[in-house]
Image (tube, rainbow, N blue to C red; front, side, top):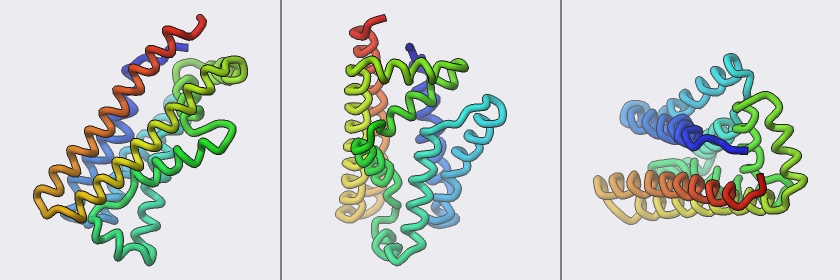
Length: 205
């Protein structure tokens, strides 16, 4: 059950880098709401391509898209005035909260992300993953740990960037906020790859 590390890189580009780039490019011209909509375009395009060409549903893209949709609802609701002070919506914080809340379910979010990746590799591999989930308690613990780490990391990143935005003036706030964002995503991605390799070395073949 080996997932090529290149797939983590592709997932980072599609679900993090491209939406962030679209957001940065458009926020100065269309405001926060317009930039959020623009950040959703790469995700929607990828999900359509993934579904039509590969007959696959990308769970991670769906989660990120749901976070953007919730941020849009917050901005368009009565909370928009408070969110406006923070300049950027709490997309990552909402997604992180979704990860943490999923720990109360029998199968947390990372389970569905891993299963989605397996199904893209080859038809029927998701069934193999389901069987391993039932047979290997160590796999269950590792998936739950990854869910917790990503949830805490994303919520912490969002709270840190919110504090930076409220406490510092531009352009220092923008530069530091961007650094914190990419350092967090890069660190979480690197930790995931290292932890996955260690788990696969210990897991029975």
